[in-house]
Each structure stands twice: as C-alpha cells, then as structure tokens.
Image: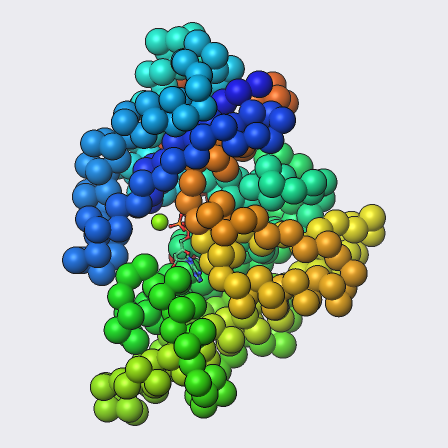
Length: 350
Ligand code: ATP
Ligand code: MG
Ligand code: FE
C-alpha cells in the first residue's frame, strides 16, 4: 500500500509518499519561515496563499522522488484539521481533486493524530501507549488505545508549550520560531542555575499543565534587568526556562504514568510527539523518567517531530488499512479534538 500525504495546517507546506511497510519514499517540507518572520509569528492569510502557491510543485517533487505516478497510489491523505482554516482548505481541496481525478480513496487526517501515530511509523510501538503531545498549539497527555482511540488525561489550562517557547524567545529577543532558538541559547549558558523560575502545577493533583505564569516570570526577570539583556543574561534565562519546562513536563508525566499503569496493567511505552519533542533536553528528561518507571521511551527523529507530511500519510495508512476513508464532501475542521469526550480546559480548548 502506498499513500500520498499532504500537510498544510500551519506554516509548513509538505508532501510525502509512505508505504504500509513503513518506508518513507519521499518527504518534502517547505517552511514559510521567511514569509512570516517580519511579523514575528504566523499570519494566516499569508500562510494560505503560500500553501496555494507551493503545494502542487511539492507534490510533484515528492512523487518524482518516490519514483511513482498518481496511478501507483492506493489513497490520498490530507490534514483535515485542526489548524488555520485557509491552509487546511488548500490541502484538502488538492487531495480531493487528485482522489476524484484518479478514482482514489481520500482520507482526511486529524493533524494531531498524525503527530500521535508518528512513533508507530519510526519504531515498533504497540497500543496502548502513553503520549505526551507537545506542539505549537497543544500540550496534552493521552492514553492512546488504538487508531482513533484517544483518552485525554491532561491538557494545558492556558498556553501550549510550543507557544510558551515562542513567547519566551520573543521576550528574550531571540526571534521566531522560538523553540530551536531557545534551545541553542540554553546550550550556550555559562550559569544555567542563575535564575529561579516558578514551576507551575508542580506536585498538584491531576495531569493538567499551565505555562502562562512561567512566561510572566521570564518577563519580570527581563524587566528587573532593565529590559536590556547581555548575551549571558539571555542564555542563562533561556536555560532556566527550558529546564523548568522539562521539569514540569516530567512531573505531569509521572502522574499520568501512574494513572496509565492502573488502567493498563499490561504496560506500554511513553511516547513524546509534536514540535517541542525535538528539544533534546526535554527528550533526555523524559527518557530518564521512563527508565525510572520501567517503560520503553520512544521519541521520533527530530525532523518528524515538527510538522511534516510523512506523519499524515502514515496516519492515513493506519486508518485506511482499517477500512476507513472519507467522502469527498468532508468539510475542513478548524477545531478537531483527539478526545471529543474531554471537557474543554479553562482558556483555550485543547
Ligand atoms: P499543532 O501541532 O499543535 O497544531 P503546530 O503544528 O504549529 O501546532 P508543531 O509544528 O508540531 O506545531 O511544533 C511547532 C512548535 O514546536 C513551535 O512552537 C516551536 O517553537 C516548537 N519547537 C520546535 N523545535 C523545538 C525545540 N527544539 N525546542 C523547543 N520547542 C521547539
Ligand atoms: Mg510550523
Ligand atoms: Fe503540528
């Protein structure tokens, strides 16, 4: 089985060709970074236009790299949501057009399910597993019990963790996108223990997260330094922020592990996914935690943590081989929770 995947939900335009033998035959990603950098964040209208301009060429490139024609495909999968609606429409319409023209099945993939199932593309991960999904728009702990079967154990009550990285980077004058820049600055820190930051939710019952207080604390430090940071200040603050996030994530995961093990005595792996999972300090902290609890730890390769289309093609394969596909009347969804039964948290739905 060979599937074309399309991803257009945020600021990466991506196309990939993946087989059910877990072979990534092509995986092309075009980041729109330069288009959005002057604005310090993603501008939805610019993103939608850029997807429209580049998607056809990227699909052609992916197909050429895979050495196949549309006639060789078994299905076409595209991100159907959640995300910036203009971009999602571009991807879904393109996938539907290919499916209609070639008489192929169309699979609308939940972007978060793409992140959630990536570990099964790259590693031998069986259901159930405990997933920490940490991305630009989400921070959730989920018991993954099967394809399409997600039970949310915790979520953020304010900012997503990637968002916290991006806002902190802005405060520190590091630029956009923040995650990788904060990580680099933290690695340069000469006195990483210099700043104390609060650890939101640490030790509290439940598995929810909160990151807005942390961001405010960083701002307070910046103000106390007179608003002008030396490189050393910036690097030390970045290190404090990153270490605190890693600690908070580990604390919340430890609670979720207890719950997961009660509900699934047969066990399962701890899996991390989403853009923030590319952070090496966070990966290392979670690996230690998993080891302590006798759980295998799985983190996808860095380039499959941030947005890509291989994960969309793979999630499409996972659904398609269970006999699932979507009608061409599928409507793109700006919101699409993985666990629809979970009560929205305070602040943003997630
Ligand atoms: P969502 O998946 O929730 O819809 P998204 O698709 O925009 O959001 P991703 O592409 O999965 O998010 O992740 C992007 C986020 O990951 C950004 O907030 C970015 O700062 C963060 N990120 C990327 N690399 C790193 C890193 N090395 N360390 C920390 N954060 C990172
Ligand atoms: Mg992005
Ligand atoms: Fe994402």
